[in-house]
Length: 141
Image (cartoon, rainbow, N blue to C red; front, side, top):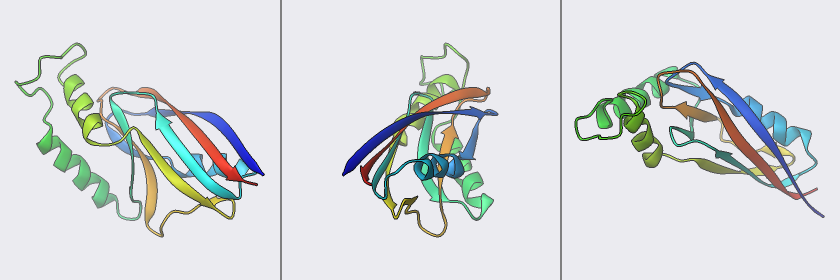
């Protein structure tokens, strides 16, 4: 029998950061009856994104942020859109270069992440925000 359920997830960010949300997503998957299927996560914003990356060494996250800061500098003179400050358009470009959704396998009722993988919300703005995501889990019960 196939089952589908959804939950909205709200996550507070403290400004620009890579925030590990693996536990929150795991709790949603574990609360449902799906044993084998897929978990889809979609972030409802244009200045934050989602990614899967290493969750063991914090240097990886610092290196990612440093690389993107060089690739997409805040306040770049080419950017016309600055309605909310110098990080505004840079945040939109960062979002365009990354992802607003991820899909993960569910195996035996749990996320099938690799040993060193974590799920991250990447806040691209300097101000704190409340970020909303929709988590949809579907599959066999």
